[in-house]
Image (cartoon, rainbow, N blue to C red):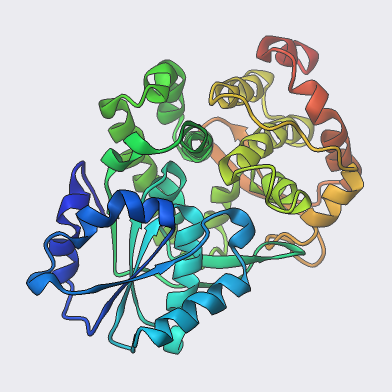
Length: 360
């Protein structure tokens, strides 16, 4: 893992130092490739040919059909077991390319070049890959660590506003589950972050990477501690699945999910009203979110039952007893979850201070 401004311009050199690969294959989207082509082509010894494999990087394309298309494209390009796959793009590209790398010829080398906030601080770290099924998100996948991750905060300058803002949900998550000081920094500096201040961005990206790497190193296969990285994701994944991955970007769904998790924490494990309202207030400052869908709470609950954290048919939620600490909880009554699903759209429209008063 390397994180440094301008690192993309040295990507060829960093990759060449890994080992000598028989061929180099970039999996990316047309939009990302248009932005990165010149930088990635520069510097390879002898101007080695890069084989480009394009994919749709929308969440709706994160499926087995895309995996098959990419695998067949690799075959046509002559990729063998000594080839290298370079995943250049956001979280969808990284997850799909990682799953392709894990399964193509039973495994080929992988490098991540993440180009979104979500990918830089979360999805490119830790080796989780996967695709969605109609029944739920990330239900097929593998743990497959990359050989190298190159994080260049400079590429975020050209990221569309909605993607940039949505990705901040994952950064807020790290503050909630592991670092009260990071959470306070976000509260104090959110305006500068939204303006893409270089120093503020560098700090929150590097700190998020440190937290994710520490958690993953202690729990590589998500058997315990790593579950805390899913704060807000049980609700968020249900929202994504129920709307067929067309309404929300991942970070936007997680933002709604974190606010729901804050409410659920208050109702079930006595998360203090002040902590609950701070989580909601900071999440709102990311910017406007797509409206909560008109879907029956019971239907959303059905999607939650397909979540990969379900154990023996029991829902598990990551909740925060206080800012800076989180844990996994099961045995929560479904009627309480349904109440949150019914009330969340209305409860979360008021001001954070009103929310704290109502639940104080």
